[in-house]
Length: 317
Image (cartoon, rainbow, N blue to C red; front, side, top):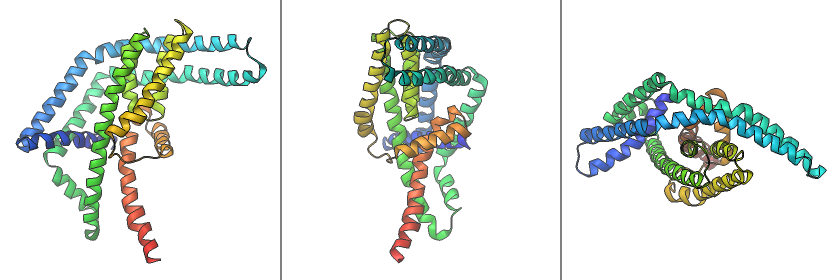
């Protein structure tokens, strides 16, 4: 089901490009073909130019991060000799956090590496999603009407309106998140390169990809470059943290309001709870689908439960 929803997300995004091409007086069939070809060219280009060095550096990153975290732990032990007693409790908490990161961080990035290196399984899943996307794009009205028919006749017009709102919100979210990913990856890469942090390319790609996971993503993305910068000179770890905080502030206060004005407003607690549920039941890698599902679910809950049911009771009362 998650692959089907992923196909719906991609179909919604590509359908926007199809609409643009149709406005240029291309027939829908030709517009779909051009959009799919452009998507395949993008996938092939990324696979050839980005994926091989990314996998190679990611493997190095998995090996180096535990060493950096161990250096941080040793550094915290050294600080204990110079800090007052009231800070010792915080240091013990930091040691516990670092020990947890030493066990969790390699496992997280190993999962990403396993996904990327398992080319056959990944290729089959991509192929399945691509076939579903083409099917959805070729006859969207048929699938839409088939879904609407599942509801009682008196409610089908409302369902059609909800689907329109869901499509608009999902399309806006996809456009915005792809834009944010690109900008964040570029800024992270430039900043890490200027700081001379090892494996800057891979860390930048990770920063961009983890933008898909609000709250947790930025926290996870800053750990590897900080761990890599500390063995060189301690100030680099602080500089990396400051760089990522600056980038996240830019995303929150400039990029997101600029490109996601029409996106559904999500409460931070709702976003975090959805991520915890997805991580618990579906695994870390499925976190990338948590937010688009919540975007759509919130519209349905608002329109059906709040507006059509609860508000109607209030009016009759």
